[in-house]
Image (cartoon, rainbow, N blue to C red):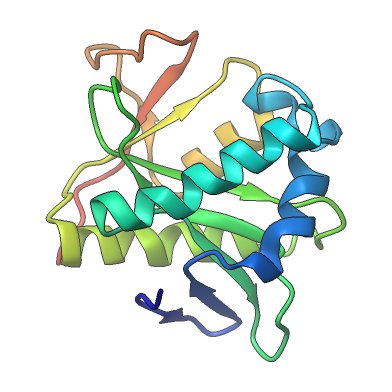
Length: 170
């Protein structure tokens, strides 16, 4: 499968591929997965990875895996997703284990994919579902201009705080 590629000043964002599996597995099986409900087995990580690929197949969009320009190794993922049963489309992000945290990569990827979702999907004011207490994601949501929307419907598999992004222009 081929799909869109987004290039930013420092990153290349693309659909997930088998080459991303080990980095994703290390992330989902490790301590950084705490905000996603905790570490899981490799078998469960595989099912989640296949979900990321399947989202692209079934919906035509999904989480972009991103790497620094010139490097094939994914260091995170960001992008639009609409999980079955969730009330709205979401812009989500994660930095994998071993990635250079604090360098603005997640923000750069989230901004690029949010703009792509506005342009390609018509998403003007998407949300981000963030687990209460996930201070890193809350801080990034704030830097992205998002704020908690107390009127937004929360997914039933929460608890989640619903962060509403500012209106995006296509």
